[in-house]
Image 1 (cartoon, rainbow, N blue to C red):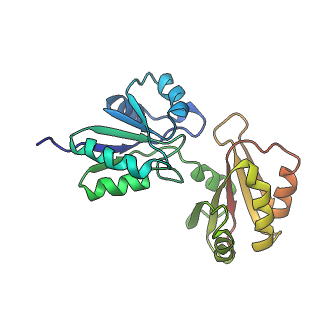
Image 2: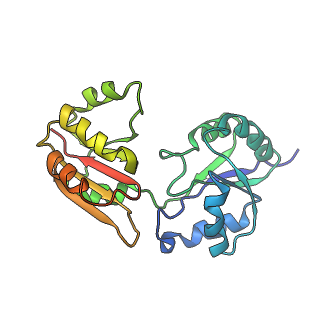
Image 3: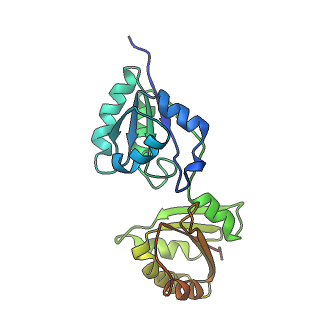
Length: 225
């Protein structure tokens, strides 16, 4: 019987390639298979670090079906590394389901430390960092209002992810449920050339982004009540 393999969760830079760790590069070069959220997005990164392993797609649309096959490979002794488009796998990205299935089957898992967007955004915000509530992306429709109502009285710092095309709408909703004077901090393009953090009330930050570029992924930190 073959010895069981190992699943590695490997963070990748959220923008700046210099944030790739030596260990991450080594693990990816030693892996039998690399699983990528989008193989086209990961191709430039892997090429930059001279990584030529086989790469297969593992994303939210095929995660359940793909995980069963991956577990079989792991049981056959394969070393498999999972990466997302940017940041740490399973943090608002595919990975959770695969980790759960691997654990059910007695597979060893190793998660490397590395880049994730919410940590620098939280530290930059100036809000308390000893206790915080990470919500990732709020539901697009169903359940969104319920989440806002639950978070309105949250005492810890709240961290949310948001896309550029929804940012202004989200700030309008925050003004409605949290109050226009609630203190927030919005970071975008973290680690990249045009990195920016805007702090102030919900109303002030919304006014700023109404006249400035809405580009890149956004991290919103909300001060607790």
